[in-house]
Length: 292
Image (tube, rainbow, N blue to C red; front, side):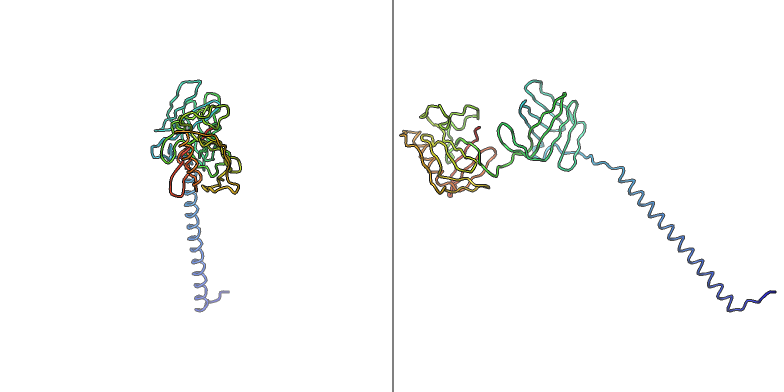
């Protein structure tokens, strides 16, 4: 028995068919879009996977493009410039090799040359002989041995405690004795067993671990008078200062008097390269180099 579909039933059936077709088409579009997104993400990941953290590494941040490092026991000097690593040691010939590979990651840089690997870490380093601080710690592996030392820019100290100095100039006037190259036999009146009264004897400044001072004015020994604080501060000590009363004459007396007058007026200290500069309120200076 067949039933005849009314006009209303035909209209309802057609509407249901249309909704099914629209739903199917939307599903296909969503599937196609998801597939394209998946393909795009896969392409990005594939591109990232092909990258490397190895990049060209500048030899130095200095304007002249030269990086220098050195160490002790045994002593060595290394130079990195124009893509060449040069190493000097006391027990071998000077070697120069081109950099074959350079890598930077975080605060570290590494360089590889024939028979030499150099690692530079941005970590403050103190020279074991001079006490000078530098920006980088350097490690070199070459010919079966490891050399360690310091490199990069020298760092200005924040404290002078525990240091010893000899005067090289008083208010711009150079002192011959204090301006000699540093050595382990620096001739100053602060050294025990040396004959006082030598012409042009350079004054000295010893700063102990608490910032108090002692030394020689070029004629007499002195203790106290100033205290050196952190970050460039200098103040008169509450106890004042005392000194021996040996008679001095001529240039030696003039140096002692000028040194004493300048140091009593000092208000600040600063570093200029490896030199210490004491400065008075009216901008007069005492310039010193470190002794060990």
